[in-house]
Structures are given as structure tokens and as C-alpha cells.
Image 1 (cartoon, rainbow, N blue to C red):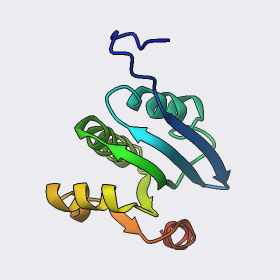
Image 2: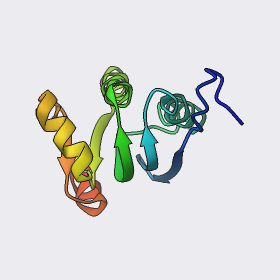
Image 3: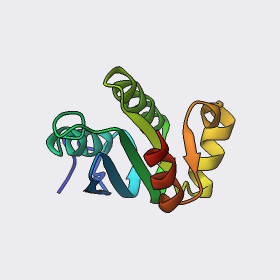
Image 4: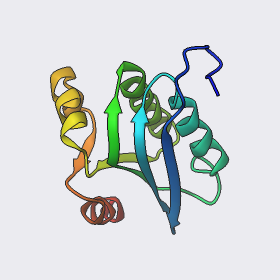
Amino acid sequence: MTSPTGSGHRPNLTVSLVRREQIVVVRLGGELDLHTVPILRDALESGAVWGPPATRAVILDLSGITFCDSSGLGELIATMKHGQAAGIRLLLSAVPAVMARLLAITGLDKAFIICPDTDEALRRAAES
């Protein structure tokens, strides 16, 4: 099976959502790139992350990410902005080295709330 672009790339991103009262934990695994960002976007929309019931914070658990390109970074920024517009905090947790380096090089490590693990992110999200 080839992708719609004909490149032969098979989207390789898994997304699972768990709601813990007003906090949504989104676990990502695989590649976050041009071909897979729609999977993340669709999961956030279909999972009612931005709407009722009221969400205070979204935690993106990035521990399973193996690759990220500029489209993936762009989607993280778009997700943060969408959350800000809705009054929802976005936290990144368990950021793997490949992602931490990209965030540092681009200066985005200063824009995001980054936690070492999801438990810490849950604590910080509950404080807000």
C-alpha cells in the first residue's frame, strides 16, 4: 500500500488518549512527520480533547516518538496554539533525545512546558 502522495511511505504513528477528569493524556508512538501529523490532528479532534467535557490540560507523552521532522514540530506548535485559544495548557512529557535536541535547536524548549515523565506532567497539570 502506498501513501496518497505516491511516495510509498506508510504512516507510522500510534495515538492513544486517556481522559483523567479534566486532563487528557495523549501517548504517541512512531514517527511524527508530514505523513502522520493528520493522524494526531484527527485523534485530538475525534477524541473531543478541545470540547466538552471541559479540559484543563493536554499532556503529550512523546516517549514513543522515534522521528520528528519540521511538520511534526509545526503540529506541536499548532496544538499548543489551539490549546491556548481554548484556555487549555499543553505539556510535553517523556521527551526522547531525538525530540529534545530538535526542541533545543529551534528554541521551542522555551515555548513548551516539558516534564521528565507523565507522572510529573500530571502533577503540574493538576496544579493549574
